[in-house]
Length: 293
Image (cartoon, rainbow, N blue to C red; front, side, top):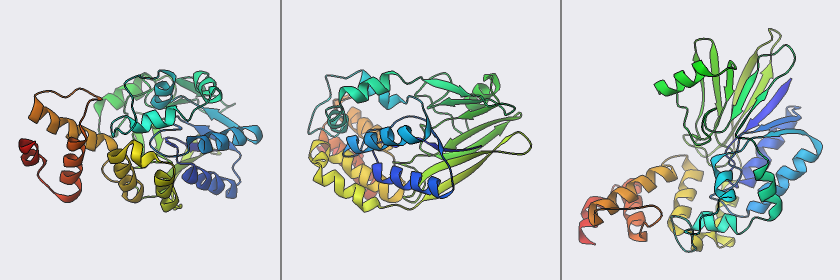
């Protein structure tokens, strides 16, 4: 038995199509999706139409990610032409009721049980929380693995590809299809295979795809105008896999607090986004710039 395991597409339909095509070339017809289907990137309907088409012909399992909770719990503070929430606003207003119904039916976690093979827990963040990181160097990860009923966990959310083994238990993260980190700009997914020893083995894959097409879409869709700094970060992550949106956001909020004494998401002025990017990408001194605002 073989499965292609894909997570964190984030609206990157170009990378998604490339990964699925690669899976087809390996003869795989079973798919597991671990959440975060949309967000950050343009034309979200293209990602959803591809997923709908895929499930009509092939066996697909879908799990909810934290982004799906965003769409199901619309925040009226989201607004256009705003680097903090513009991409969220854009994606939500490109959804139909069909997407909302699809997301609402997804479980936060599930189990994959096949005859004679070890049971696998499927989740986005962790078996406990959809937005919880399970990282290789975190004692909390080992505790969750130890307490989990199944010996195998498949999770995403961190956008990093890795395998963790602890006390005969295994955690596998396939990385991110659409916005991978530390990938050199390649899309990532995983192939999971059953073995003759009635166990599971993984093959981690990083695949070249048309990154420039995805970046062009940011402009032709109008998304760049709706979330300018966010799209600049997206462009750099897509090309390099370095400096996540979260890292730049944290720095922008830190600079804002130093200047104003407080900073509450999502009220982050564009100037602090610019300073954070200048500091991270070009080595500028955001602290000095913040003093002059």
